[in-house]
Length: 366
Image (cartoon, rainbow, N blue to C red; front, side):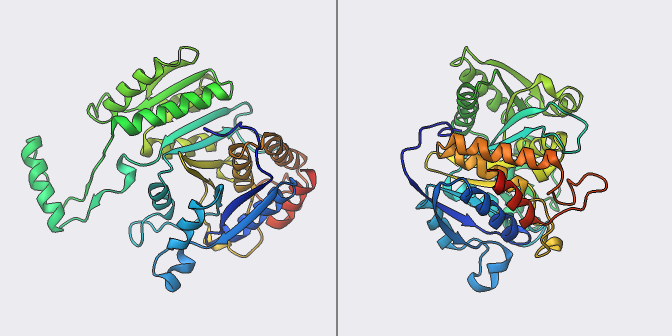
């Protein structure tokens, strides 16, 4: 994370809080409670995005949200619903593209008290955020654009592509590949990490993933102090389940990164303790990996730790390392004690508390 371990130079930070929808407003407020407990002076700019603002603005991502983020030191976002198959495209993807937040950072670290098959996982997933299949360059089946593209692709490939096909485009560029791999190596160097693994499918997709791998090898040559290796993505998934202790920092194109980061979250107990950051040259938005869980909205029930830990990543980005460590240690302590935790973390025989109450317990330890 480019600015993650800098020196604090200001006394007040302007931070945009995007409340999200579903459980988003609850976990967002829980996170603000904990960050305020650090004693750092935040100017909070509270805005809304997601399905709840569609009727008012005609879009799930109003312009005022983007403008607020652009004029802030950083932003933190509650979960936002992404419809499956129909409806608007992901607000998360739109934010990353509009603000050129090219690096998605997702740590996965074991915490005592969180139920998991592993106890010593400590991984960093660095995911390219702006291109690949996940960038959403698609053509609706049967549309004039899709039919025209099918005709061209059929001719170029020598294969007959059915006219009923939906088409997605997978752009991989040397420029985007280079900067994400550099980000991974810089993160490793600044944070005492020993190895970077590039993950790909270059054995099959030779001109896209092959390009990503070629660039990764070139960039790795500039970091002789960091070990470098590569893995094919399906083999990588198996290796992570079998022996996660062999890996350190993983760098991946967009779609593989989305999948593998959820896998690594599963290694440490699930999305409820998995933070995330989206970082660019001129800004950053921090978010939990998990979804908006609308069926639990307003029930004061869900685990707020993922977004609170994302808040710790925000503190690191701002250069507030000591405060970040305090937040991370407070989360770990509350979970390990197992007394003021939500239903998914509560040990047998312990009555779970609500979202707000767990945040208050964490804030008290900060």
